[in-house]
Image 1 (tube, rainbow, N blue to C red):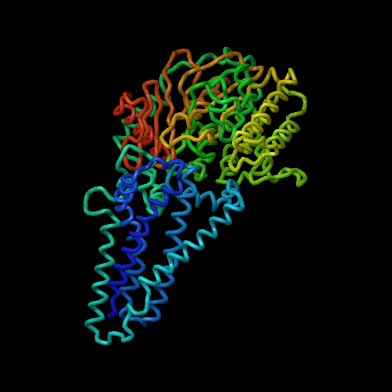
Image 2 (cartoon, one colour):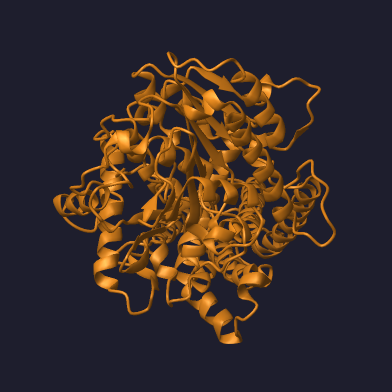
Length: 622
């Protein structure tokens, strides 16, 4: 066959497109819990509607072969083959890694591949892998190696084979110039599939969305394109998610986050002006664990505390991971779909926070965690929030057994008990934040697993016991208990039970419990709210201003104001109000879920878009 760099180039591009298109049915087959009811036509639709993103992703990968083709008339065939072989191996690895990572993470995250796993791994490889069993890591690595090798063999045979290159080099200048010019044009034409054609709208994730079934839309999205899109867009806060004039978006956000309300007087909420405040961030808890919230009888200790104190029974998690959840609780700052604000120390250092606000009124501040505080830039956020005393896994003796997420919750709680065991001193109020971790996957806890019990249930029972023991410890000292306010809230959306990707309410519905001897009101508060509302609520209870917490509103008010809760996940943003729930795909700018079906779709989705836009405007200006 004649020396043809154009043929090799086209073969590389088309082969890459075909391989990426074939990824999707395998993605669905390897996630049977989600796609068991998918029909043959669903598989065909998923392949067809994802082709635009396949063309784009293959275009990115074909730029290097195009450059090699431009140079090929001027260099030895051996060098051409070597360069192509190297790039074909790299391409095989990239395609295999994106497919395997996307397929493996989807059951846990319910979203397509983005830069989040890379950020987690770079910040703390040990923490990023803590949720995975050793055998799973080994198995994935072996599968990655085998798949990469198979793809490389295929690329080598179809793209780099020797009989595709004539041993005689072109010696005349005009033919060589012509070949380079042809390859230059062919490479430049990759702009078309990469951009997505010549229309005003450029390629984005919405190109693959074609129906109202979220899981099928997810299956149609090319994982490599999703990753690249996330990597190139997550920092452009000032240009992301522009749906309406900024003034209109700001007005929507203010109407939801800062309505004109009158908080209940502080002395009607607390019996002491400056109680000790304990905030317990409960890893992955959900309302489905509490019988009082129509859940299963799992977190019975916390359920009993809710019965004794104040239960907010219509609260929703702001996001899906701890790096979004901690700022939501402690800074009243919503989780964003494309990134975690915790990553940007230049921004978080200027954010309001509960620790900073209380420290400036005379509180000592402590943060206890059993895992690594450096994971996901958490330590920088905690220090920037002016926390005085930080305890993490490194502060526990080697005698204490440690799992993948550090020390188990009971050992963590024992450490907290020792630290606060001194007699109560009313002249020095304290803020104590405790972040649990035992109810995080892989759910390995020092509690025997009863036969037939789900590992997650066992882990939540264990964590519930540890958390309850801390509260009962406070309760045992009457002086301390009379001057204590305890706030129990999950760090993010729940990990139990299993729900379908479109069951946003069950996934995000979380318990918020307040108790303590200093707390006056008891019972149930049914106002819709979010984790972000804890900051303003606590400030009003302490008689402190909360205007700095832009996205936070008090839940205990004189007026009976209908609440609202904003939440987000990668590529998704939702709003819950008394009128219903709407979830938009913020990259595709389309409604992804509506509940109930007769809810006002246009007005609810407008609220979600406006709030999201205002959030990103605020992120760009901090």
